[in-house]
Length: 380
Image 1: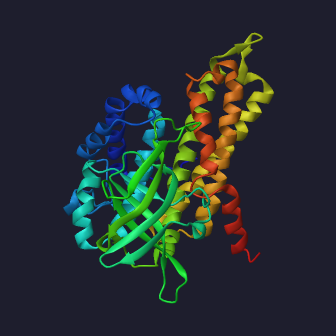
Image 2: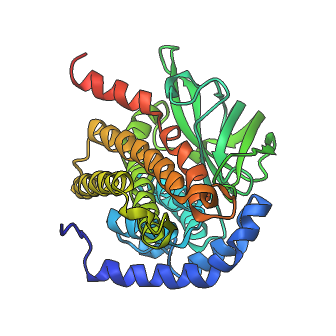
Image 3: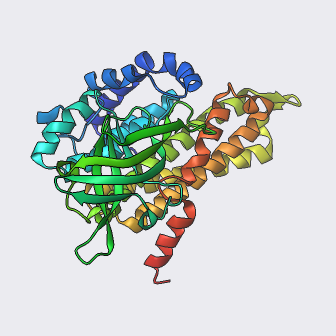
């Protein structure tokens, strides 16, 4: 089936991504996995290569390409190279999309050059110890005090939290009627009252630093407000389809890679005098996975085209996110089983993908929340 949505310019960008990752990331990745964090030098090298801020305005060092296909290509090449993706994706697309769409000209001039060059690393801080998928349940507050907001609260599970120089923080602010609204504030590294907690010890995505963040009477200039006060929930709802498309890009690309690796193994691994892929059960498992992954790819390409056209709905993004990530987990489990004992070794590619895959159904909104959103769209 022909389902290639990319033009020549995207394939040229793919070649750039592939060469960069093979040169600058692959040789060091095992060490980053052991360290639990990516070397800061990679960000600056990626910026110099033109791989950061692809959709940011050219006058601020970006690529000026508001086309999600470039993001998808970068994610596919990260996956192909086996390089930890969440930190780069969060910086390069999820956070940057808010900066590109919601900032003033003064804020863009202040922040975008550093994000595009890799001198600044970005993070988005939504989740809290008592609020994950339920954004309305956040407790971190920001109280206006003259030309500043005073922040108090805690965030957790923050990708890039340890090294981020710019953190987009969702906070509760008071509306004119007294009811709490949500606003988005950019907290810069070194701001008094802003501190980082421990690096969280995760099952997978070992090289992607994930941290706790604390705000104790943290004074943030009003000039760091993103968009309008109390409009943050609307901004987040508008941004979530793109974030979920990013997660699905990882899911589909990873499922394709795992299947390709397992097919190679099934053709070459012998048992009882024949290739294990020739046994009917294994053949049927692989045939089913191939079919489902093809369907997922077609649906992903459709949603990508809808996002580029400004039509991707919250409901369709939810459908795509839960279906592709649950598929990724099932593919990982089936492929590890077909690799046998070798698949259970930590050094094996399929073992790493199995561990990395599990969180995909959790972050960006759990599968259960995605189904709740879809159910509401059905009038239930």
